[in-house]
Image (cartoon, rainbow, N blue to C red; front, side, top):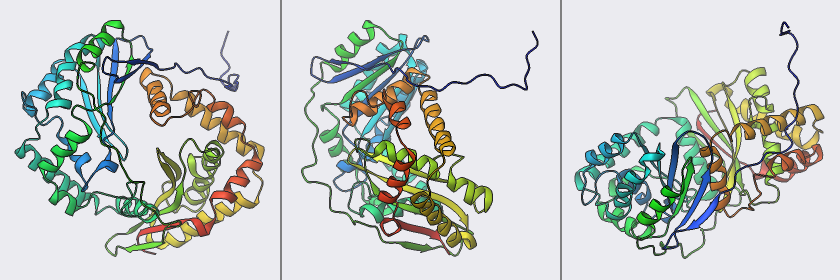
Amino acid sequence: MILDRTIAPPSRKVEHVTIPTAEKINLDNNIPLYTIRAGEQPVMRLELIFDAGSKFDAIGGESLFVSKMLTEGTKNHKAAEISEFFDQFGAFTEITQSFERLAITVHGLTKHLTKLLPMLKEMISESIFPEAEFSMQRNIASQTLKVNLEKTAFVASQTFREQIFGANHPYGKSVNQAIIENITPEAVREFYAKQISGKLFTIFLSGNFGEEEIKALNESFGQMPAGSPEKLEEKFPETPKVGENLLVSRSENLQSSIRVGRKLFNRSHPDFFKFIVTNTIFGGYFGSRLMKNIREEKGFTYGISSSLIPQKEGGYLIIGTDVKKEFTQQTIDEIHKEIIRLQTEQISENELETAKNYMIGSFVGSLNTPFEVADRQKVVILENLPSDFYQNYIQQVNAVSGEDVMEIANKYLNAEELCEVVVGGK
């Protein structure tokens, strides 16, 4: 039989997807361990997650520098020795921090997990933050920031968050040169003692593993002191209802970076799914209205996007693009025209269906590995979402109607509630 390549293969809609659930085990000291067993390859990913994000900073920068310094020396090992230790087992270690959390992630072969645990335990209980390495990391951070501040896109995103949340809000604060210059090893050690060393944290283990690995985790981390980390006593500071529009003039730059958006909500909000469908149509994928108008028809930019950034305590909408200075105002005008279209014209069934199919296809495609499944379950657990939040993702997306899209656009995309930041010029 000769295959006729002029005929497309049959297609069918994905109606439901089953996501492996995370099994919870409490270690002897009540540290929670969540396990996701999946996959055939003998590999694993171990994540240690602490309440040690930048929102817990006292003076600013502590969380950032702890994340940079955890592999720079312990009571028993120097930085080079720590690096060589993980290398000999072919393990890849990554330390990241965000507004909310600090995470230590290790990828490697499952058979080596038990050998890696003593060094990880040492890092989270006996790091010493050596002066020489601290000075080097501070210099690196300072030089990196100087380079980034030359980029209009970096400044625009940083300024935009400050405008909508306020400079003193955890989601609006940024590390600046003054913070880098003033941070001290003592401040970083104090943060480490309050939020990490001897404190409760959450463990996620995903991949192909057995009871031996779980037992080893309990023998290593389950016997440690595990007190409660320091909590924020006061609520987040009051922030502007609507951020002030701002132009940061940069005569030396040929381009302008545009950021438009507002404060919004997190994943637990009842309008979350309706909004992400609306946003996908508006600017959330390559076939969106903003891309068709501003990139394909007008040729103002290589790319423009609109994203909802959900955080644990809230979230925000950010529409972003880079354009030549002479196209800045025209681009902003076209963004608002597309908003008005969403608010006043009923979307066609074909356009709505295309956006939904893209969202569902992307979602299903993001569940190919145990680690991707763990990422989904991690969001559910850390943000206290319903256990079936992602199990019902496809049904929630399919339930959004054209009327819902128009309603959401009128509810959350009004021009007077959007903040505009331009870095470059008009």
